[in-house]
Each structure stands twice: as C-alpha cells, then as structure tokens.
Length: 208
Ligand SMILES: C[S@@+](CC[C@H](N)C(=O)[O-])C[C@H]1O[C@@H](n2cnc3c(N)ncnc32)[C@H](O)[C@@H]1O
Image (cartoon, rainbow, N blue to C red; front, side, top):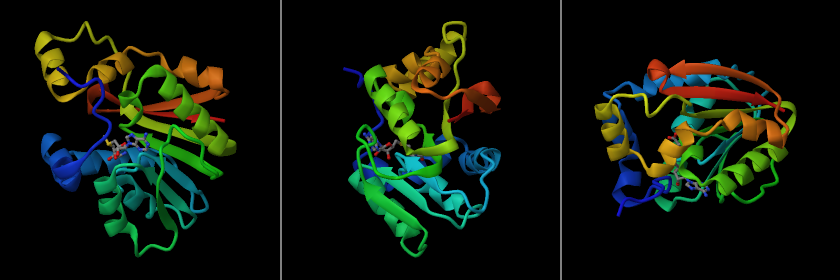
C-alpha cells in the first residue's frame, strides 16, 4: 500500500539524500535552492530557524547571508548526523533533535520550512504553522518553500502519474490546499511569492 507521507527520511535514503536530490532534479537543485534563499532577502543580523532542516542544505546557504544564529530542527537520526557533519565547525549554527509539531523556545527573524509541510496531515500542518508564528519576532517572516497550489487535475495524465510515483498522497492534497487561508487564520497577514520549476514550486513568505 502507498504511504500517506514520505516526510520522514531514513537509512540509505538519508545518508545519500543530497546525491538523490541532485540526480532526481537533473543537477538543478543546488542552483534552485541558492536562488530561493536569495529571494528570502536575509539580512546580516537575521536569526533563522529551519523546521525539518534535513541534511542542512539550506543551513549552509544561510551562512552566506547572516552572522546571527541559525538553528536547525529535525528528528531523522541519519539526516541530523549528515547535518551535524556539515555544520559543526560553524559557531552560529546549532542543530537539535526536535519534533516540529511540538513547541520550541526560540525567537527568530525568519522561520524556514522546505519540502516538509506537504508531508503532514491538516491538523499537524496547523500545529507547525502555529509554532512558526510563536517563534517569530514581530514583523518576522515564515518562508515556506514547497509545492505551489495549482490545478492538479488539469495537468496531463503523464505528469500526474509521474508526480504520484515519486510523491505521497499528502503532497497531492497539499497542492489543492489554500495554505494562505490557514496562515491568515493563525495571524499572518502580508504575503509575497516567488515561483520556480515553471510554477511547480513556490517560496511563500508570510509576515507576522
Ligand atoms: C523531504 S526532507 C526535506 C529536508 C530539507 N528541508 C530540505 O529541503 O532538503 C523532510 C525532512 O523533514 C524531517 N521531518 C519529518 N518529520 C519531522 C518532524 N515531525 N519534526 C522535525 N523534522 C521532521 C525529516 O527527517 C526530513 O529531514
């Protein structure tokens, strides 16, 4: 039976996560991530919390923009190991084993979440969004890098078959979810958006 979510990454998939993403994206992922992180408009004094930081691909990019604290949270043992291997030399980077559905004590300028939110059911998504809101300073920004909302059923059959082969049913549901409505109900009000991969992926920035 097909798994509802693929958001927990374990074992060999975690150990070779960066290589798998690089090959699956036809070597475009690193460039795309650099562009998306540039679009986040990070200032030198911004503190950043990365929800589900994985192997720290984004954390390593944040280092180019800020000298302030960068905190990664994840609960995948192998993902955390890979992240710590990359980041242990940087004094402003801290990585913790933490379930992002639970509260954490940090207060930051930006909360980032990339390719994580689509893998949760609605109630957990709402918990995560509430946690992000609580973690942000006034005027802080929640930056969601994930699948865009689009007319999934209107896409050609080959596209849907391919997407469903690689992605979980919750990702399809996420594409059909008006995420800004949930963000508004939690208290976020201003939004701006950037698109990548022909509109398949979006950076949605929600301001507190
Ligand atoms: C698809 S990966 C994305 C990793 C990273 N954000 C990136 O874009 O490369 C999803 C990540 O979410 C983490 N994750 C899944 N459930 C989580 C939870 N409840 N709390 C914290 N991290 C979680 C997984 O361990 C994995 O590292």
